[in-house]
Amino acid sequence: MKKTVKTGAWLTDDYTTIDELVEMSQEELVHKLHCYDLDGCIPGWTLVGTAEVSITLDAPDKMISNKVDALKVELTKTKADAEAKCNFILGQINNLLAIEFKPEGKKK
Image (cartoon, rainbow, N blue to C red; front, side, top):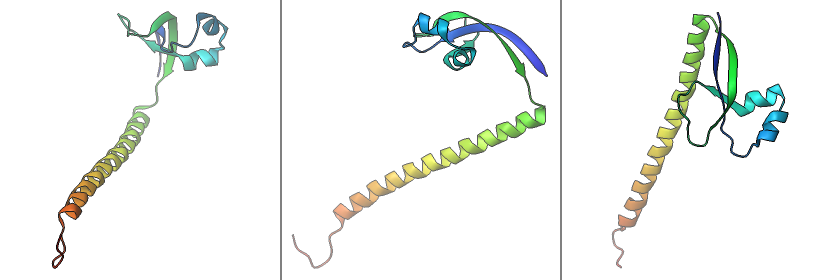
């Protein structure tokens, strides 16, 4: 299914000049600009024009499959982040226990 929408074209890069923007190829513009339908301005963003965007949607089963794949990637990252946090906490516990440990028979 194909849908076409008109929306605002926003520049979020403060380091791009208007002259550079005018000279950019279509491909460069696609990568530099963001298309959003905003009523107001996000601080630092500049409305530079309008965009007409055509979107060809995948079949519902393909969209579901893509979403499941994205969630699996998110799950893997979440597990890795949690494991890293657990390892950090365990390291702190071990460091504290090592400070507290005094072998028997040894005097200060």
